[in-house]
Image (cartoon, rainbow over all chains, first blue to last red; front, side, top):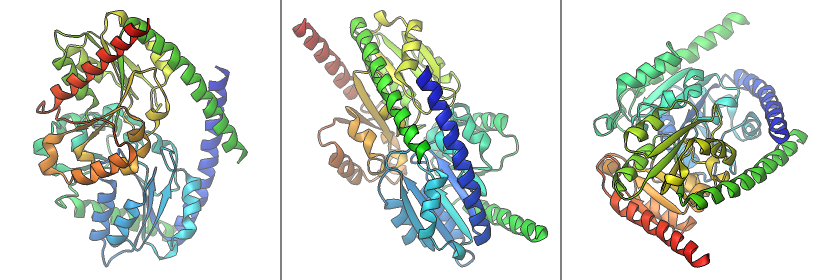
Length: 230
Length: 230
């Protein structure tokens, strides 16, 4: 029992340290006017594909940077650079199941942050722990796919409740999987009645432009708010 | 830095405690002759469906018990009991991203362990942390689905390398997703050249009987080994 109590205390300390660092890097994102989105999802939900689709939809209008978080490998960073990201950097957590603000802070000098309009942070594939560690982001985005089943909001309620926007990906698979949209929305709405949800397919492009319009609108609102404040 | 070092030390202590408890419950599984399989996978890969299919394939031949691990809800326990499980118990981790041996130990008195031939432990949906916490199981099973993409062994190498058997689920979706089987096996074989892999579809039933035959064979081998020892 002593070990467990000690562990909880240490985790609390780590989370407080994390929040301080998150505040600090949030200021950096604000100064650079880089609207920052923390993308959280299971492995294989389509996080990288969502980023690639957003880069495509924003081409010629905005410069997009990406921080890729993974246990191992740099394949996603290569993909987003090939896909038109203005800049990208890989964080390998070496076993850690989520990104922490300190990891993002260390990665920032490798990015031309002041040149970016949007910064996507692709978290490690995990529907649980990323939610506890703030990265200084403007927006928490939770991505889930039809292939994972309609029961995910019931089984991982915290991350759905805490997110600012939810993307339901792989709509093109709807005919081939047992996904009951009614039950999905019922569970989701009991957790977060007003959170915007966008149904998309990164494979066909369905729904992407609507979501990116919403994202741009949110980013402009924030900038307008800043102008009004200062 | 001090906080981090302290944290690592506490986590090491917790893992050592966990392993001691795992050894203890392994003995319990041995005494009960309940062959125990720890099922690890992302959210939505089909862990519960794999268990339901196994229960179906073993009907009339073996009694199957299930421990269901989830952040929240008891829907999977209801499903497996309806699906013919001899006994089942739910563990809600309340936010913890993996099961630990102590949680399983606490759940055991709620199960008629001595009546079981197989015990499936469905871990929390997570491709990272469950791998670090032994549950006293006989077999570590890693499940992954074609919908998650072929790059999972590259991105989550530890869990694939540590598993005794791998199931590739949702083979029925192969025509509708971008899954390159050659690249999947290339990455997997670089980590674990000899681990058995079974391609299955829980939706159509494809490949399930072959996998369950292998499971029964493994269980008999273990029993034969025990008979030879004592």
